[in-house]
Length: 407
Image (cartoon, rainbow, N blue to C red):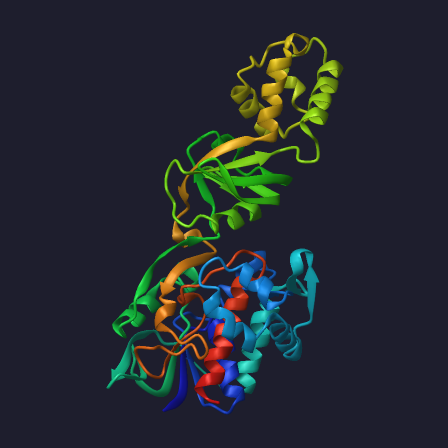
């Protein structure tokens, strides 16, 4: 008999277990993987962006859906609280560009190991068991059933993650458990996802990583998001930090509606870029147009830009007209790709959708439909932009659940 059983040993699950155990609860984590924190260990390209060093208002502004639901949880456990917690358990932190907080070591493994160490210190039982169903009687959750046995508990927390990165255990099985308890599941979709494009020329540029570019996400010709930084071409479209952030601004994918405009030379005005092109042409007077672009563009993009410009690759640069130069400049300042869809949800960093927030108490994270059943982390229908905001959601909801169960 446990006071609390947390189903799922990821970021939210471990934080919830620690919070409840520090209050004196007898806690167990039921984790079907062979180790805890598998997804946490690969976040932030293996560096683990634990949170964003910002006030709650800024954090909520970076949560496009259901931010108001998280107001109470953030009030109870802010980014400052997250930072103080990790410093307390032996993970020195640093704040980088965009107020992103990382361990000083730049190792996500250090974050995972510190959490595991704290769980051991608090005598939290780690059960390598797969929860197959919940024990629900008279409108109350009274434990779980695994493939091995029944386990009774005063409360159960579902912290099973979403549906992205299923290899880490986030395969959506928590949704089925919640549904059996009567909960509505908002259909899971990719968020912070690479995008596929109508144009197929990205195949020839696949693997090319552009830095210091400016990009705009267009919705029927209107800019709805813009960013500056890195973008990468893939065999099916585009990815990279700017694209992942942009994907979170697409409320519903519709073919023909969205496009991305890339400014390959954001530091130059149209006039300055034209002057630069003229200098390059002058330096290669008598040479072929395709050769003149090699100082201006990465090699993989030269044939793409040449084809889009409509200028013959062998045309001599001193024969190129002012109008052709203007067309070339327009491509360099506004390389446009039409978006056809998201990459599969299994590849997305975060899942959009999950247990409806209308059926969860925002203060305690307890189910409004089934007493003593709680939720924490990505299983809830809340997701945010990149920058540590999604882990903040995980930690804040986990803390709110943990402290309300046994306080």
